[in-house]
Length: 484
Image 1 (cartoon, rainbow, N blue to C red):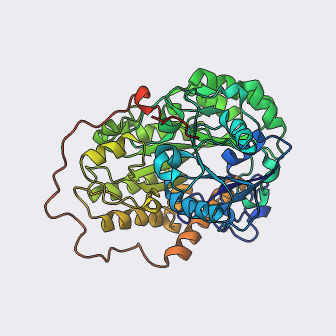
Image 2 (image 1 turned 90 degrees about the vertical axis):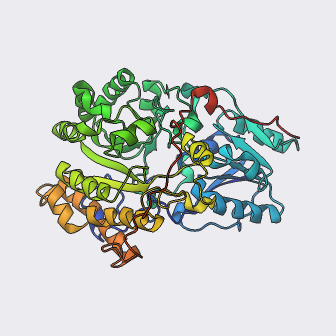
Image 3 (image 1 turned 30 degrees about the horizontal axis):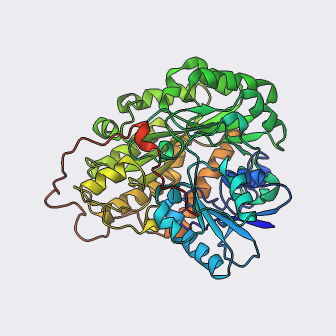
């Protein structure tokens, strides 16, 4: 039997690999500057492939490497989808089913919208699929595949399978060696879908199993795809200590409390940490409180970044525009601060009420969501009524932030002129984004050319509900009994 896994094409993927300079690959052997796909491979599909019984033939079709179509023969197709990928996933599923090939849909969007997904699939997997997938394959072989599969218990991270990386093309990704060490997040941000999918109970793999996996990988640079690798600081310290003999280079996502633990930063750097991705989100204390991300203290951001830099670690910051009290001045203040902090990388997105999050539920109750074209739920489009700014102005300012941050003037201001090979890698990476933005937008998004100022003349009154907080019990997916 042939099983085909598919990651649908996502034209708005902010983690698509930009085009680097022709000779950039000679500067660094750790990063694949010739990649033509994405920053990272689809580890979720490679893990499911590993869970497929070995007697079956398995293949992975990654839309990050180019558009995918239902042209390959298969006996069973598994398609994953985030919300922005849902329309493409559904269209692809419909194509396969029209050819008589059964389709299973899974991933975060089908998990949050199972009835909708069920209209395009023979089966829908809700939540984590690790324990479910082998049973689903066997049910299919026996002609008894159910319409819904859901495991109410969190997966034991000590038992997860090693991904089938042999099914992926390493040439397609900037960082091919990606590894997961944890699932879940101890924080409970109302806009984030991580805890909706993986829970607020923080789970982690034993360090010795992670080390065993790392020893199987070619190349010494690793990106740990955890949503928060330091969610349990004591566990993180033990993990970083276990990395010491491996002589790695690595990066991962952390929360800002990383900067408040000198021992944690020291161990991270000694174990090979090159940089960390941090969700700063906003400089508004009110917006931080409303979002439920109490670990962030905007008044301390500059000090925190300086501490991380002093530890020898680079910072990739993530910022969200579109909180209710974001007025025009927030964009200039954000960019001024980032340049002052000498942050090496940044990304900018628009507040998006993703299905299944507390924010989605809140905006629905306030009747502020303007449409459900899931392709626009891409973190770069406004899909709700903002009380102060038009959707067009928010979109412009978000794109302008990208252009200003990755302008040559800003790069010089933030990074200085390159003096070492490491500095040169930073410059090449920043300039690759500069070039990608120019190819995509030309001379757009430097100056506002829209109608009027884009400021709402009469601020739209927003119902003053208390921001919704979703407790862990409310995050458990309410699943209908499995059908025949």
